[in-house]
Image 1 (cartoon, rainbow, N blue to C red):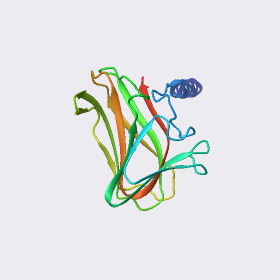
Image 2: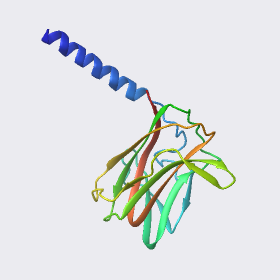
Image 3: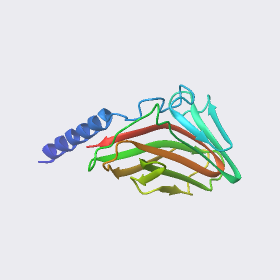
Image 4: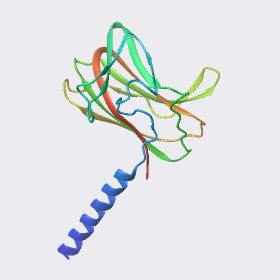
Length: 172
């Protein structure tokens, strides 16, 4: 009985690991910043490509925000488009490494619904408690809504943060 249970447990674990590996990243252009800033838009005072400190690979994106300003980046809609299906489950994942004590990281998943009109698809993620100088994974699960094009933006306030390996996957 114990052997059968262990075999079932191992088979289930292998099956789960295989399904996680097969998840296709819907962010198809430059999700790890190995191609510079292609596929992304930037706003704020300072964004830099860092070529020596990637979570995987050799590059990551560094955002710097000073007192009184907000720095953010977001998907470039002319280059990087993805459509979500209503009712399907998704997960936006990324690795972050604060280089200074962080005031806040804010991540928003939304859709443009008309001229300068936007609708949130997921609850806005906010975190003030990330560890300094450590890569940490952020994961935001949400359910797709019936909008033709989805986008996301990532903002920081008064800090320096590295970002890498951004993935948007359908969860089965």
